[in-house]
Amino acid sequence: FAEDLVLRLGSQWRLKASSDRLRASVRDGLRAALVDPMTGLYNRRYALPHLALVATQAARTGAPFALMLADLDFFKRINDTHGHSAGDAVLTETARRLDSQLRTDDVIARVGGEEFMMVFPNTDQTIATQLAERLCRQINARPFDVPGLDRPIRVTISIGVVVGPLAAQGADIGLTTDSERITTALIDQADRALYDA
Image 1 (cartoon, rainbow, N blue to C red):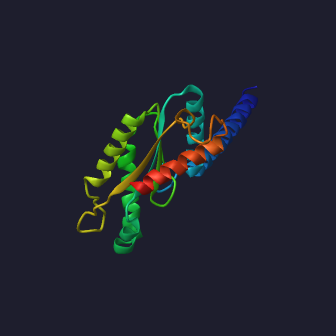
Image 2 (cartoon, rainbow, N blue to C red; image 1 turned 45 degrees about the horizontal axis):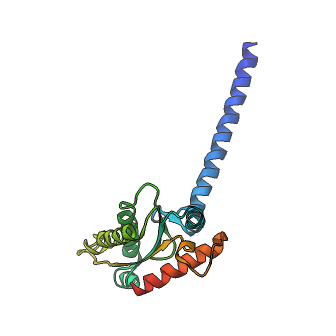
Image 3 (cartoon, one colour; image 1 turned 30 degrees about the horizontal axis):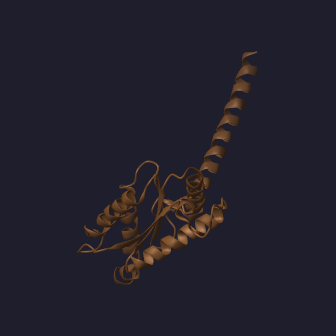
């Protein structure tokens, strides 16, 4: 009986270890699909559905939220002048500085080469403006120390802000709950605001 029990326990232990490895592999795969490997921020695959969820909930409840698109100014110059490893270091530090200013429910994602998207639930125009100014100061006020370079690099960022829910603002999308249309309209508005910035 004891030998049989030992064999069963050994079999169950191997089965559990195999199940744990499979679970870890799935978790790592999901993380790789949703997280930018360089910055550790979420990527576009995560950010767009999250924005759609926040926007749809806001359209239903009337609670304000803010969407920000941020872009490092003249980033190509950094890569061209100092090399891509310096550009990567600037992107990583930018991500760290921006992320350090966000609240628990806020989400930041790297959605393009040097472009970041931030979603702020329960955020009205006044708070959104203050947040955008604070985020700009985090990047613009302090030069970036880059390993291998003698002098820090000056980096600036521009941020476009749009506050929703769009339906409450009388946007041309009306009272739709179509999350793709809502998301597209928000991103278009934030892109225009970013261009103006």
